[in-house]
Length: 238
Image (cartoon, rainbow, N blue to C red):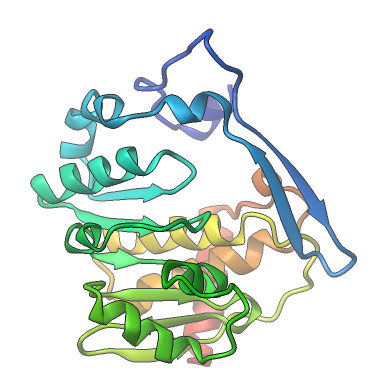
């Protein structure tokens, strides 16, 4: 019902009786910061063959994005098919897990947050080294374009030709849950519309900031009108 209301094509969603739907328990502190306890349930059954069944949809898309809430083999296959069809590929390595360096050749934009960046490098999530230094370590392993979400500080973009931080907007934070998802969604839409990586990141930052202003992920996701308004505020400041 939610997919239908939001205009999401659910043609490739499959039902199974072998395990329950994934569920997450979100724990909030008084600053709106969160951690999540997940049972991935039926999501663990997603494999490369599942992704292959959606190849025609991938071939008609502008951007192909994967997260690591699905098994790694499925995320890799999505990136392979995206590359096969000449699409922009985004890997949001959340939640962070060890990934083979070979996947970097398939990924146009890698979008970890600061703790995920460190985990990808085999470091503690709170390693004190600057994120910019760690991005360069990741790029030496083959990651070409890295966009690190910095929470309330915005995002860091590092490519062959760009090294810049884009600040976030100031908002009253209620719940940070879904901020990374919202950023990646806005970023992907911006790239699909042909925007530069910086402008696409500004749209992502706008979406990420707005989702923090309401309790709950789905209620907090911005409308396009609200995202565009926040984008203009961020663009004017940078």
